[in-house]
Structure formats: C-alpha cells, structure tokens
Length: 124
Image 1 (cartoon, rainbow, N blue to C red):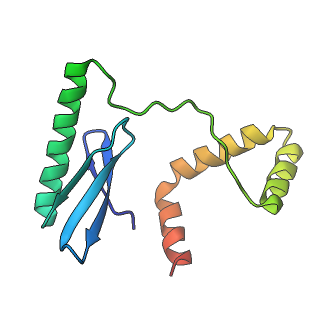
Image 2: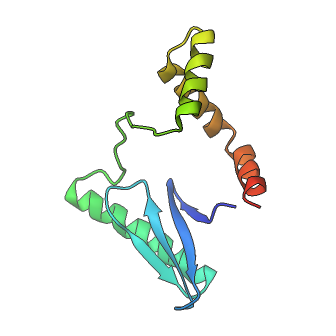
C-alpha cells in the first residue's frame, strides 16, 4: 500500500502521528517544502488541496515553475553481484548497462501496480 494523496498532477506522502493524533503529509516533486495536516482524512485532503492551490498561485505570482526539474542523470548504488548480473545480461543483449537500466525503469513504471503487490508480499 502506498500512503499518498493526489490532486491535479501533484502527489503527497501521508502519515499519522499517534502521539499528536494528527494526519500529516508532504508534497512530492516540487521545488519547495510544502507540508499539511489534519485531524481527519477529510480535513487532511482539504488541507492538501489548499496547499497545492496556494503553492501554484504563489509560483505564478513569482514567475517560477512549481515542478521539480529532473536532469535525467542520477547515481544508483547496488550490490556488486547485482551490478555484475545486470552488466552480463546487458552484454548478452548487445546493449549498454545504461540502456538496460533504462529498460528496467520503464518496465517498473509501466507495471507499478504489480510491483506494489510484490512489495506488499515480500514485506509481509
């Protein structure tokens, strides 16, 4: 299960604090830190939507893009054995390791719901 909310094209993580008896969240994929909270699910959703609307309006008035910029370049640290196996498979298919990783990422994104089920099973 992914604990998140969606509004327009934006998503946020959602958590619950038993100590404070409050739900809280953080907007993902933006250039700034936006958090919100509520004491009920309905209040949390409303606070999230208001946070997004306020953020978009602020960005518009400042003339800045609200969305985080992704360069398409990042480092991935994996165990040496996995690195070796991936490199061997890539070579066998006459592709670079970079292209192999891109293919794996495309597959994972296109099969997100199946991956979520697998993660739930493996996490008990």
